[in-house]
Length: 132
Image 1 (cartoon, rainbow, N blue to C red):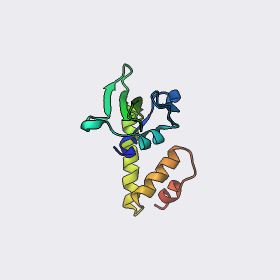
Image 2: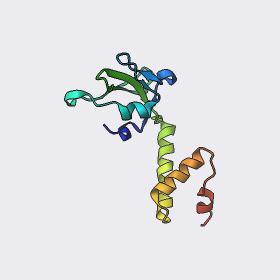
Image 3: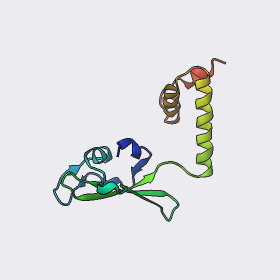
Image 4: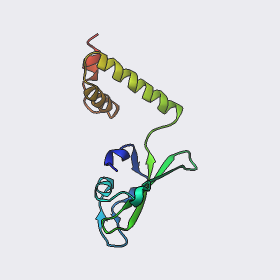
């Protein structure tokens, strides 16, 4: 399983890392290292189990095998805001992305600049949008 599979997930508990294997004592300092240095479940079993928490959040339990063979588990929650305002925000993001790509701006560049704007970081959106 590639680390990209987990791109939409964040650690449910801040205290989840560092994670220590109870069998061999190996320490995983963060989620990236955890996914990179552990293996999929054997026999083609799924490494993921999902459910909806009491507060409506989508939770994914991730099962991975330590290098010693011991099975480790961690919980992750989807970062995506599934509320109506979250849905409207995603629609606006997509409209802006389409507008910028229609102006000849590469999609990945436009996406990066929109995200910078949303984070309050210096970006080129105003420059691009004032060209009208």
